[in-house]
View (cartoon, rainbow, N blue to C red):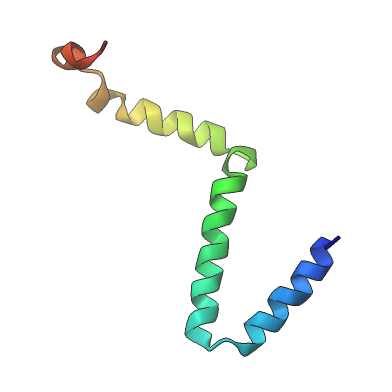
Length: 70
């Protein structure tokens, strides 16, 4: 069974063989995965989502668009 430490070692060995541009691409992908899987747990994420919803409410809530609701 692999532990997180074992995965870190494998990732380090992969990074050492990659050109710098691909390391940046790997970092971007890792950040993307982190944002997907950690977003709800991040401190302030829920409040941020609520603020976004409130700001966009002006755009979303229009009576003339209610005909599209089921």
